[in-house]
Image (cartoon, rainbow, N blue to C red):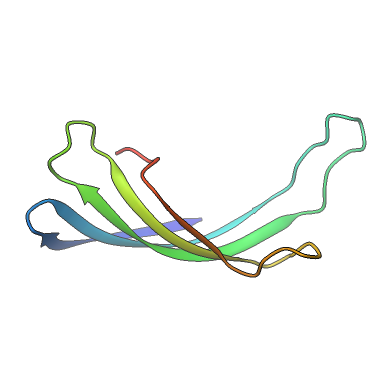
Length: 87
């Protein structure tokens, strides 16, 4: 599940600001015949900055997420910065 909200804020006429909150859950089906992995879930939030001047319509993502089911040695928080989503 994901909820996005866009604001009317524009930074220097280049970026449109928005935010997102999400909950994610799923499992992995193993190819070796061992069945499904245990379920994994996380919660997160982030900022979205839409590039208004780009001909490609890229979105710059700044996201933080926390796993609800961690593996031993796994970090508690994940931070991601990128532009892999297009609108």
